[in-house]
Image (cartoon, rainbow, N blue to C red; front, side, top):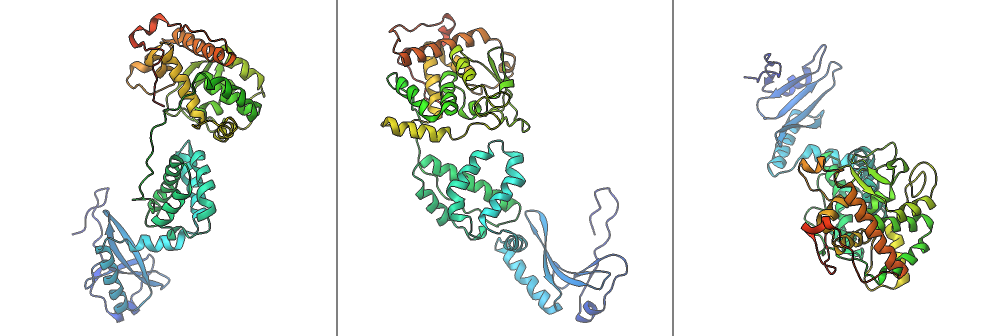
Length: 418
């Protein structure tokens, strides 16, 4: 008995019969297409249209959903043979309809990657540009003209092996995997070649600039040009995420406070904060002075109509010029600021508040502005300490604020979290 429709009405009984060659040639329909199911070969159905066009299809289930495989206008014996072959493939875990669709629609990897960005990433992933940059730099030159379905795990491993930095190799694989995962879901390809490829071993970064390095890096920032130099200095002086600093907008600066909306704003190019929570940080006087020097009018503070880009490249060039033993990244500047907060005795709670680490709980919402005075003092103290090290005027004494007692740490303490 046929199952009822969603609205509760009775469903029409399926049209079943033991098909014959004569019936297949003679059957017609006047107004609407009809399906005639073969009683002898389960899953085989003859689709007949009012125009006289007819074709066999094989229907099977995959993950609880029906799949229709088009066999075509063939003889009954051939259709039954094809139905048995298809059901055998399904029994082996294959999905013949999806594989046929993928074979026809995958195209090159470059075409598939472009579809992924336009149809999915731009709408769903606010940080899509970072992954897209890795794809264009490391994958398109090698895979761009290859058929997407032809790319294998060995190709993935080969690309990862050519990327010097283990972290970048892992990030590139993750970007490729996201594309293939989407393509599998859209039935463009049938498998993700990144699945099963093991990431490179990495260790958590704990790089911070030492007191002796700070003046050298500060002076070297200027070699990156006014805009990039200013952005790098503001990252160091505020401890905010490089991606958020590079997208700093003038309308978000109010009375010395940088107010970052948690949600992205496509109209203005604001990516939102990493954890999706709105954040408010005091800009110390020296940071406000730097921002004033790059005043480009409305828009992004660093870049005008477009946000400044390639701060990572600027830091690599600076490290090369300074010939430092251990490379430093823009994020290491943020880590240096966080470490300075704890070094000055303000504690990790203050560091977490200022750097917008997710704390969770309803209390964090209501306490958003409660620590404004304390945060302002912390930001000015840390900026003052950094500038005194840059200028060579830093004294031996470290001033500790009374409100840091619960989380006080020593001058030598170090915070290792990003």
